[in-house]
Image (cartoon, rainbow, N blue to C red; front, side, top):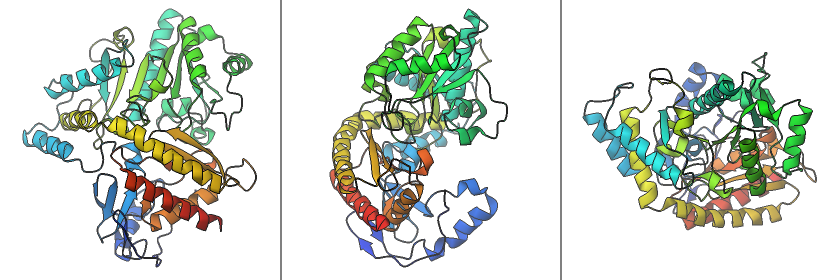
Length: 456
């Protein structure tokens, strides 16, 4: 992935209801901040467009020099309830003023309230869920899911320890999370991969043409995997790299397969939950119930918090004090999460995600028709989408085109994170769920303009 250039360039001035570009980009006055970051942080931290954020409101973000962008990143799918939501800020300040900033596992009043709220919302789609383990990051939830699947499996049979996951999947950056992930480059550093983690092709119908469930079983057989030795199957509800969903019939057959083989079905909803896909939980599109649900990102629209949801039969396998986390259920994060969940309900953001998602995807379909040889596919549901860039007349990923598009967009007042997915060739779209029709339409127009310029 190329690094964004820090040389300020003159760009056309922009002033609309939502976008404002007044300076060279990047802003010359921002260079001391950007250069200091590149000096003192690892280079891995410098992969985003060089905008020094000052504040955000709704679906918009501003820098310190009067520039404003429509945000299509949600700060990496965090701000479902929008940037700077006042009820969330008020809840954070109120809790901080009590003097209780942290308390490890000692009880506080917000912890049971949040756990109950999360369980109740999960039970609307999965009645089997009755326990909530609050953590700090998405990676913690997937690591814990692996631990619970294997612990349960090995109690049945010491050989029942295989975790099945999918190619191109991403489940975090810790050791176990990267081993179940399906991106080979991210686990080259490990060296001695656990043979109990196996990948099969994700049936997106694009990079993997065969989306039949028989292909799933065939792959396991070719890998020498005895189904009775599988303790769990984990998948992103949609694959984050391309916003790709599996066929609903495939997932229903996978649910039945897990039941037959006493394996747990785990949905990684870290990106998908809390309305992102136009339903409260992403797995609702499949019409199945999971055994474990991994959540994070949009759970607070702000602070670091995550959770693993499951049934007591699975979640209670470890005794008191043996499955914990330092910042689990931090009271300030809990206050933010409670306010966030209330906003999502009160402002009907799931419904808005579905409605604005239809508008977004209609615009992206027209964009693909406009550039049929350079956009291989557009995947997603609700307010998440992946525009997959390809080399002319092929299905080969074109990371250079995707990067040029993102670079041009940020210079035009539309902000996304760096291209992701197969070959770094997917333009990922994930605005806050509060985005309105005018902001969607203006954003799609900017994206079309950027594609035209990038291809030219």
